[in-house]
Length: 94
Image (tube, rainbow, N blue to C red):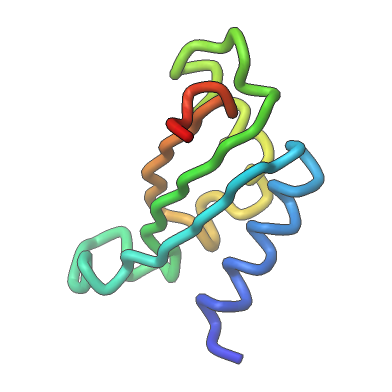
């Protein structure tokens, strides 16, 4: 199994522990940042789309803080940069 695939599985496990997920998508975008100084440390660039009821009544900053808290063990060793798109279930069009 590839390193980043293993990382994504670990991220998924930690997010599943923190949230009642109705949707989660994690994309490794490290290849878009090849040669970037942060990439040299081994940490990758990831984009997360997450939908969970815990985001109800939270603003964007609080949602991002919650995701960062869930992934704190991976920052900065495995995650150098993180793009977060976090929504409550009722914000997703049916």
